[in-house]
Length: 438
Image 1 (cartoon, helix red, strand yellow):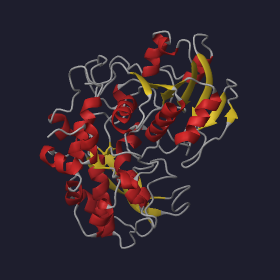
Image 2 (spheres, rainbow, N blue to C red):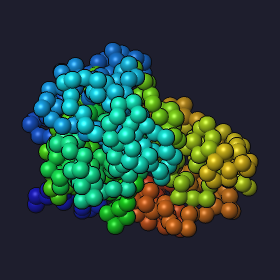
Image 3 (tube, rainbow, N blue to C red):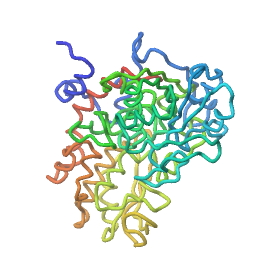
Image 4 (spheres, rainbow, N blue to C red):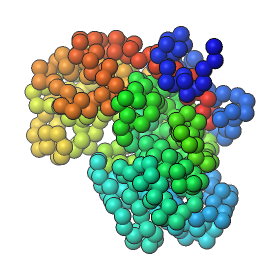
């Protein structure tokens, strides 16, 4: 029996069960998740340097390679750029400023995502429509726009080519990848060409981890069935979206980064880090985010309003017993410190809460999604005040009601993780076809 990749994603459970082998980053790497060979979607691959855990020759982003080649892919095009403060060169100049000053590029518009083009808005906000003071370019707001309304924005802007360059954080619910998806759909509707300038996944591209979205729970924190920690770059995701999910594929071109390997964390790239959103201040935040962001779906603070968002978790009434219970699990690569903090905004603003801090000591062994589930399980057992958000936001974050109902039924973290392994194995099989780097 043959089954298309689209069918594999839709019916992943049964098929994936036979392929499930191992659950963490090391297990997937050992199972051979490197790029496919031949002439398919993953055939073209940039070279990579040697060494790890320290700066080799600096990684060159998709934009850096585009500029070095004289913007050949943009020649004769009216260009609009979807970007935010992370769209910078290796010298920390913003790509909009660079292209605007270069006569070889006809840059006519900028499109801002959540938090805005210049990044001034908090979570759930954007900057609206305005003219950029530095360049005079019109800036259009894409946040919460999709389908034909977003296609109409592209049409009104006068562009014929839409360029995407935003740093991702590696998690399904980080909204920039769905801005990418929505813009691809809209560009196809409007008949626009789409170019993705790639950047490294800051938490490596070794493994896909966690539950796979059920389309019945699709929202802006998850449009399509991909894993909670997808282990892909934005260019790889763009190819996946185009090949598996878009009803009308867009005319897509990707410009790969050079010198990045799937095993590289962000500090191995030599690139400057710009917070892609206000609560993603460092690559350390990104390392834990795909697991601890799940606490947005509870009545506990996820650390917003502190200097360590998503690394500090807590609530009024929690004491050291939670950290003790978490440490007793012996989770790989991480320890937990009893912690007390007073958020300056968001949950428990100005009030002292108790909880814990994640301290990752072996990031290669660390599994952020398993850790996040284990922390939910132990928090529920250690603190009588634990509750899910009334709107069941946890279901949107995890991609179904399965995690919530299993935890409520008293399941262990291993039992919860076991429930997603078949779907995850199916997603891994599809993902493998779109990987661009070794």
